[in-house]
Length: 285
Image (cartoon, rainbow, N blue to C red; front, side, top):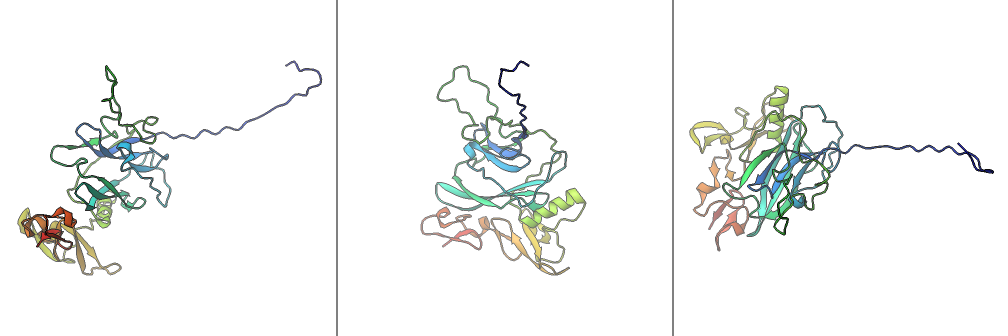
């Protein structure tokens, strides 16, 4: 190296750190028929190694901050998502989302207002596996124009992160009603640890009733709710926590059977002059 007269040599070192932020893939979710509306459990979308719900224009997406750290890469993990309507108007519905990891609540449940017609109705919703949305990897149109819609629009990391999940999906189970936290824990213990389910299978702890689809079978909580034992007391009696729409000490009644006007969550779900019974979730005069 040739140095100019009167100048000293100088050696400089710079410490660089590269942080990997890969992911963004959708594991399991639901989408509209065209894929433009979706709610999908994604991994590593906003933060490395973190689970989150992803949706079009981040309508449902919220940052979730669990109170513990872990590394799920290369591990078998049990993930559960529950979705429950907790309120609504004539144009919107308030939905509570809860995420669980290995039987425990992941972060805090949160509620989101969404259009009442969002992924609502027969033959309008389908399950999607391994990708945030089937439309999330769009094929360029021959003649781009104003009708071209990119589902990555306004989604944080929607363009920079792959929508595909890199991993194995071993088992998927869908339930019609939103499970309570104790039921989710029971499912995890059965499938991951070989334990016994704690929801709806408490033998004589809770009152029994007939399931509306199997009227000749008597089961705890009518098979339409979770039997919750008294905390801290072994083999104690408990109470039934009913699935949405069911009521009674054994969850033996369904709101559709209690009123000619049907089920409801708020008064606006009922005809004019009819109120919503919050105990039975049935419209009553």
